[in-house]
Image 1: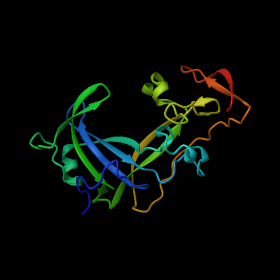
Image 2 (image 1 turned 60 degrees about the horizontal axis):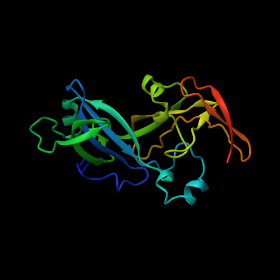
Image 3 (image 1 turned 135 degrees about the horizontal axis):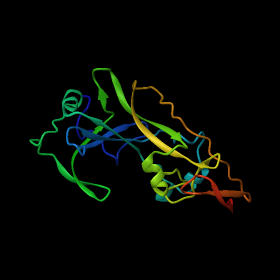
Image 4 (image 1 turned 45 degrees about the vertical axis):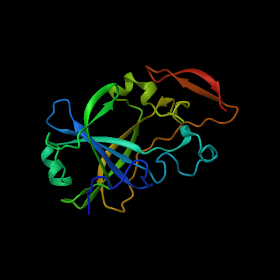
Length: 209
């Protein structure tokens, strides 16, 4: 059966699987935010296996986490596509946190969510850019691409890289083509650059490890 609630979880998500994690009302209240998570079979930015990540696989900072993406849907389409009642009569609503805000959230945990009308599956596509959104520009420390959770920033032609996940539709076995930027190389003993948070320009040089 497609689109079965509680058919998966973040803890059991396997590489290549996508999960419709939950939904919550938008600020206006007329639509729902849908949160998706996907365990990428291979990190979109890696063409080969990283020795560093393998040698530090027990360090949470080097473990590859499921990528997240959000989109919206109307309550009517939630029922038509997923069979989900998002009305107040649904007793499965719970309290959740988004940043510092407490919100109403409906846990779903639907593994490999399916669009029955188009015979397609929901997947996540990663698109990288050096042009930040307004929020990304104001929150570079949190939004720019890094080497690990707290690692050095990864740059493209000395500019910060911003990774934008998007929810797309694809065939079951279709390979999603991610749009990735080439990272600036940092060679051992060579100078690496630091970048100005506001402008993206080089401000300081440091030695590569």
